[in-house]
Length: 206
Image (cartoon, rainbow, N blue to C red; front, side, top):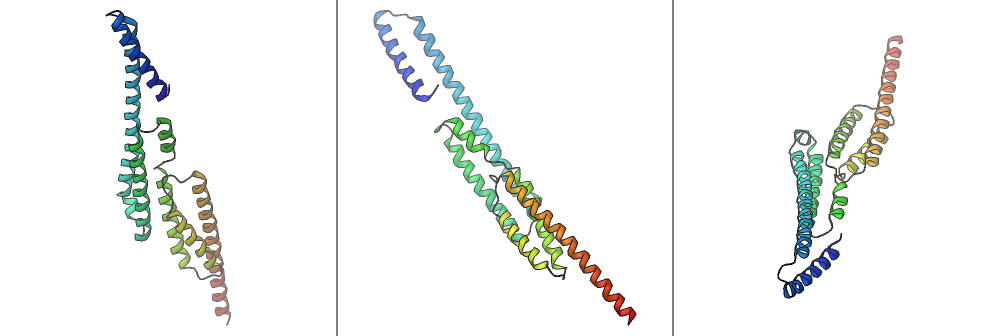
């Protein structure tokens, strides 16, 4: 039952009660109906409190994550970006919590479902992997390193914008890039090792 229907019912009951009071001092049926409406309002208030708690729990989760060791161990620039994204998420959740009671609960719930704080664990792990690959590529001098380094730089920049509303498909795409760069790095290292072995053999033959 929507808010307008509840308001109309309450108005009709108020009229019925006033007419009943004039005609007969005690009328049982309207009182029972009035009690039923009050009970529905109580259920609605309880649902709103529960929804507000759900929003608060997600915000608290993000607050703890921002101070976690895995975030602090990130490179300074990356850490700052992740923390900033977390704080922005918490601001949005605060606005959403303020909307509880002012808009329909299903609207708030739909918005809340888009916030998945747990995705930050994947984002952080991918950032750490990408930065590790960057360092590994810096130690390789084989041809093709620059292209892979550029790919990683673009991925890191993208990952630094990801937040609690990041979709799973976006995370899967980032993981594919990391896998491809890892494979390319292995090939570059193998090629570099083969070149060094050939050079050593040529030196010994001379």
